[in-house]
Length: 187
Image 1 (cartoon, rainbow, N blue to C red):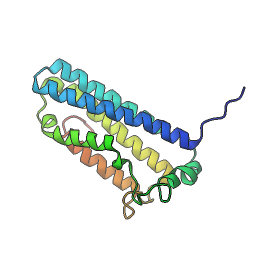
Image 2 (cartoon, rainbow, N blue to C red):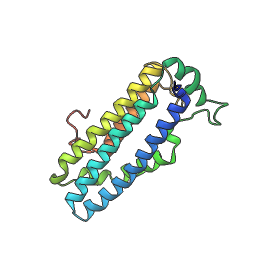
Image 3 (cartoon, rainbow, N blue to C red):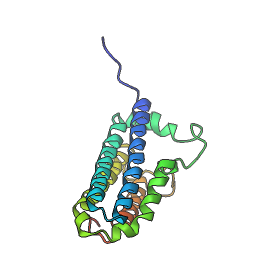
């Protein structure tokens, strides 16, 4: 019996669901990490931050798998599904996700925590920042493959999609690695 592969839309949708489950797990891990840091329970804080790093790497894999089809399928099916009349917004973006907004708010709230981490958490923090970098670079890679370096962002039509993603990366690294100690290749 031959089984037909799933459609690009189904692949995109289901791996984005997996991505957002990872985002929810990140929120939980980071809130527990924050609590453990404040309670000076460094062993548990280390465990939570390393779990968050795993979830970031898993998110990168979900993102990569969500894009496991051709550029033509992206252009003719997926990108069309993210523009009117398929969606009501003319600036559709994953930034509109509630889960993503909560994660970014948690990162903002924890900027001071990340800036003053005890030395016992340095290795876990380095792993966490490197995992975020891996995710961000993966997102740029998927975008580059599908829309190229000159295409406009769906959200910000006057900006290039790749430039926008790289600007987001710099801003988010500023939240999770404010002293720029956690990642040796942090720009």
